[in-house]
Image 1: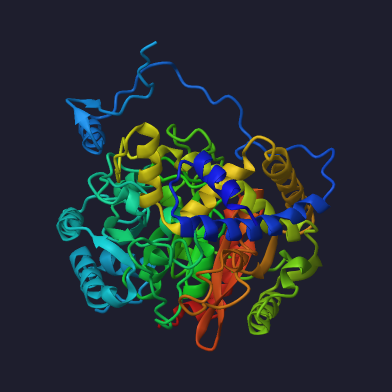
Image 2: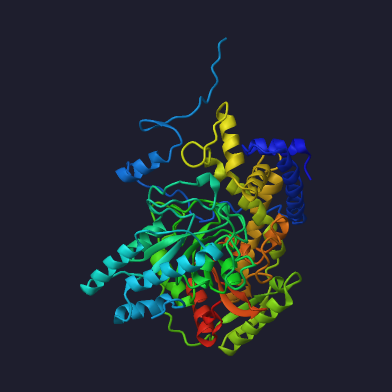
Length: 100
Length: 481
């Protein structure tokens, strides 16, 4: 079980705003799920490699040329923007203005 | 002619002989959806151009044109695959109103084969769930008993086939999301080998586990669907170059010479004894069909679910980082950018998605990554080795698909860990990247039971062989709710 502080810290990592009830609920639920997955620690995996690449492929390359998507797809992608100016995605400032 | 319980193969034969037109098949499907979808909630929307497309196919057929493998056959699409111009939500509020900008590769291939895309099916939000109760658009009901879950996360697709709306649907399977609802709804669910089918245009859950699969009534139809959607795709670098791109026609009459393994770890405590009885009857049947049965062991099975519920949320937490309220979907503006992210995601995602994103963020975070995520990747290696070892000895494995039949709506909804346990027999195929298929094998209290078959990587033919011989001598798959 997580303390409310820990749960809020994880929510911050996950970029989620939670209500007070959610903090309480998820703290308990995450605790019980982590309690279950704890059983992996019983296994000795000292010399076992991690299974990293599901497709067991390496370095899938293609020629460095631009393959333009269709104008229709481009237009549809732009139409899905929440806020735009012309064809540009409009977002809030990423860096704060500093006056010093 | 009533097309309600027909297979693709039967529809194709009727189309070829002129007994049916695609227009008739499609309009019957639309009528059935209109009549029964309100109570089942299988479809989120239906296509408004399906009849027009069917008419076009009928004209081409009449003109004697060479048509594709699925010409004029209606197919349902799970709502996490992009169809150009269709809304696609992945069952989430955060994508409400999002319009697909292009066709997923599997959708392109269905269209090229002449399939009529009939509508998009309901699902657990972002494919996270085992009951379809996590959809923002309301739960789907099991047609065998409308007070019970259909399974998930491809529950809408499984119900679309089980209820006789369509003969085929696409689903996606990350830990059992095609096979488990197939089992609970009494249809065939195929998860191909990782890499056999392109994931381009499938909304990602966990990229090392996700695979597009099919829901059909017969094994023969599953082979046909796979033949259409499989193959290398430059848009998915993990899609494999296949030595054998098409599945040869299924002509096997029996299973003589085949060795089937029963992994003892899949028949332990926690399983409904009636489910076990159905599966063991099926095993006796397979033996009568000529197969040799042998008990085998996959010793790390008991760790699979724990490894899965670390790896999958970890990958999901990363993949779902793209839902920031800016480029697409739901947007809730805050005082600054961080505030906008947190509001958008806190309001836009449902409870199960938030739980898994938090779980994954934790298991990947500094200080915990080695103990959880990296440990789970090592255990995944051990699980894969179990399969490599056992397939040196047997041709395929036979297990139950799920530990129980469909349960009442709401029963496990507030207890995530208990819900996760319903995936216990299916997650291993995704972790080990092998193909697996669920085939109907009986009923318990008038609710369907699924038999799961596993085969070595890229050996789907063995799944089809075992499954089609089984279906040629049994009639479980012909029963309809």
